[in-house]
Image (cartoon, rainbow, N blue to C red):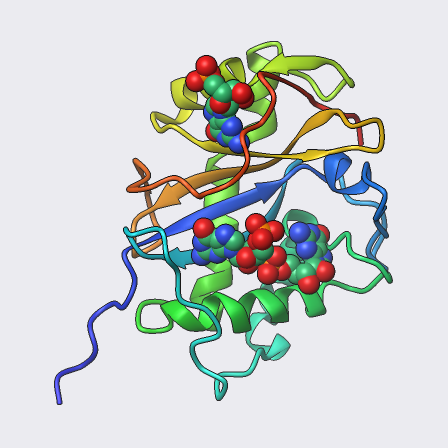
Amino acid sequence: SLPSAQDFDFFYFVQQWPGSYCDTKKSCCYPTTGKPAADFGIHGLWPNYNSGDYPSSCDPDSLYDSYQIEDLVGSMQEEWPTLACPSSDGNKFWEHEWEKHGTCSESVLDQHSYFHSALQLKNKINLLQILKGAGIEPDGGFYKVSSIKDAIKEATGFTPWIECNVDEARNSQLYQVYLCVDPSASRLIECPIFPKGAKCHREIEFPAF
Ligand code: 5GP
Ligand code: 5GP
Ligand code: 5GP
């Protein structure tokens, strides 16, 4: 039979702000390798369909293998830190992301390429620098969602989707930033569809970490 074509349409590249992950009643735990830098971290690179649906856990036979990414582990610890409790070295988080999402883009990216591509995207898109350049700082202040999106659009050329969470004082916070990436995971594209999700408040908190 013919080799299977790519079986998804694009990726969401999702970055999380650690201050917001931690600033909820679930709280957070620093990785065993130490407190991450006050920077956005990778959450995942998620294959998606143009319809908004997405595949998940596509290949139970393709197990996460930390030996395949040994050369990346230092960068992974810096750019893709885990904040879930209890503390771990990150492999649990990366394993989850590979098995749930990475296995659905295996026709394009093997395990090493999958993680390497995400790290390269993170290096190309410095969200914190982009926001700081627009006067939007992780200082506990409130900023318009429209200003945050405009700054990212101005710097990258593409409109992001913002996901908010709610802290214990019920403030709407900047939690995750979604950008869309072509199926080879090499360049940003306009999102074919934005994720479904609750609206942020018009102004949201950018908490410190
Ligand atoms: P939540 O329900 O918290 O929004 O999402 C839980 C998880 O479902 C995410 O971390 C991600 O693994 C997956 N997920 C949620 N929305 C999307 C989406 O639009 N596309 C893809 N590919 N995965 C998603
Ligand atoms: P997703 O939401 O991508 O399906 O899965 C997130 C899973 O990874 C959850 O089981 C969560 O506990 C775990 N996890 C580990 N570290 C992190 C982290 O730093 N951020 C998020 N959002 N989830 C993490
Ligand atoms: P506007 O389009 O006037 O900037 O925003 C209208 C409403 O939609 C506001 O409550 C705003 O926070 C919300 N909104 C705008 N863009 C986004 C986004 O990317 N994600 C989420 N979750 N809400 C948004």
